Length: 398
Ligand SMILES: [Ca+2]
Ligand SMILES: [Ca+2]
Image 1 (cartoon, protein in one colour):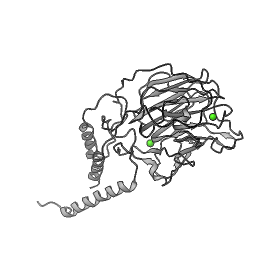
Image 2 (tube, helix red, strand yellow):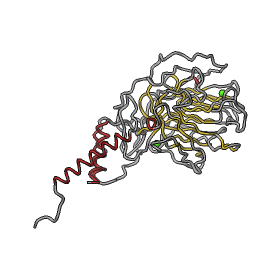
Image 3 (cartoon, rainbow, N blue to C red):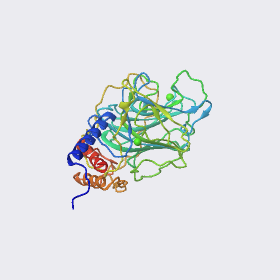
Image 4 (cartoon, helix red, strand yellow):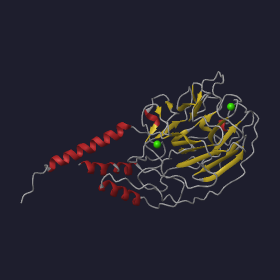
């Protein structure tokens, strides 16, 4: 018996070619930014991350999140016990701030400063000498906890900082390991809603920049993803870093997925979504700030293909203004740097069709030398590997 009606093979071939061409065009048109010096990672449904460029002037190249609605404080305005977590990917070459004793002289990732002493207090997170620093200031008392491991190495890292109000304890966890700690000022440090100020950015939480474009401050140049802010001490000891986006639970006061992928809105995925923010793009528009490079997705972690450089220890010139008096005690702990946890709990691929699943399996097994390093949640794939992620989808369609 002859086969029943089938599509002319030439038709089918040309259809496949057309679909392939369309897929490539679409991928290029989306223009989701890759991080310079780091190979592109493309996941089927891993969302997007947010890219800052460290250009930080004229109130641009940053996310601004209002701390209040009029006279009402927003949930994001934490000030007693709190935890802040996110994933970051950056290189030392792009974040060259030298070792510092004040967080506002680092490459600033999160700034909740108030100009001057600032009533209750303020805080910030930055990179100095390739390490994470976390500072809290009350009056002229502005110490920082200093991390010990490199976070600016071209790999994704899970960062968590905790602050305990009762004793002022500040802690930094990198990939789930205690990386630095210090006793800081005690008591509330939230933004005092309704205070008068001549600095319009005071009542904002700012990501990726020094909110006032302060002379001598530097700016974060890299990716950030899935920022969760909690009104609790979420960690008191080493933990297995999450292998999937943070969940929103009872103590989550703000959660930024950065999955918008375009435009300037930055939504809050915490219950109620009461603390959204907005992206202030640098020159060139918003599209360049959204990246397909994300720390987790539908593939297993691949090994060290990232062209990272070790952090420089002799970076650029130091800030021009002299800082206020500050106790510069060093962190009391220097935890081990040996990775321990195996990222074996990564989510399994969501089968779109059998071809897609099997291709991803091939990809994962084709990446040689996967180690048990707990450092990267997901490491970059190269462009060719990324491209092949399209093929199974086409196979489904065709
Ligand atoms: Ca201040
Ligand atoms: Ca995301």
